[in-house]
Figure (cartoon, one colour):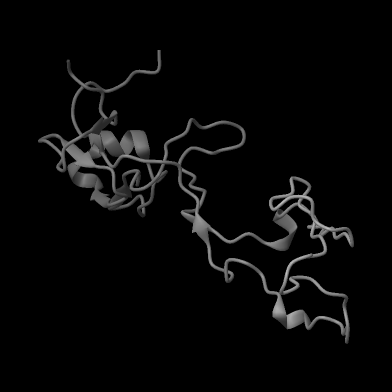
Length: 167
């Protein structure tokens, strides 16, 4: 089957066959690829005088264009650092009881007075305000992996074939 010029294909090998180019965002001379330039223009880069770009699908998931996403636009990120505004507000309450423990593994997750020796819990004494520096943000302000599971393959674009008509 003859491909359309500009048709993309996903392949499991690591090269572009004759008449195809890997989609890795490279600039291509217009003089050698006039039909493809007439379809792509400078949508994916280039100066439009001597060069134009092919799509860069390295590490990207292609999506359909819409009113939210213009054709040729890119977005997303491989890693993301959460800000305070992105984390839902929540609290961690610690409950305690002065009663003797009735179980070694209480289901209510409450601390209870220890009856054994040494005493695990004792009455508080010498209470002071906790130093704010003793608790810090988790993650060290580093980004976390933000990609879905993936399998690496190559996208290629056809340089020759049938010119697609709009009818």
